[in-house]
Length: 106
Image 1 (cartoon, rainbow, N blue to C red):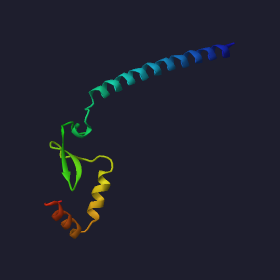
Image 2 (image 1 turned 60 degrees about the vertical axis):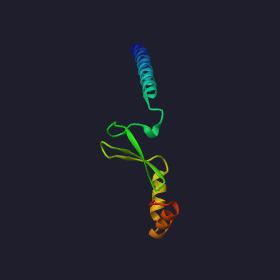
Image 3 (image 1 turned 90 degrees about the horizontal axis):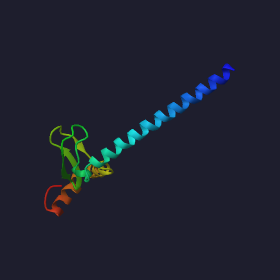
Image 4 (image 1 turned 60 degrees about the horizontal axis):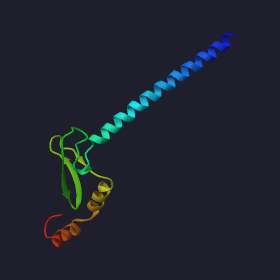
């Protein structure tokens, strides 16, 4: 008979844990919804992930780079680092020739 009590107690504890997990999951969903509502609509004009200041968009060799004036952080979007690396692999004559064709420095 004591075995029966233990199984019933285990079921009650499992149910309590399940209700607790459901409660916290609902709380987390509500917090995420509030954060998504507060998120900036334009990610390039967002906030610095490091210090929270506004980001400024700059262009380097045709690639958009988001910079933070306060902490000096540089932030790149997906694929921009690869594009910069590919441009840096070019030799100086190619870079110079591109600059002449565009009418200014790259």
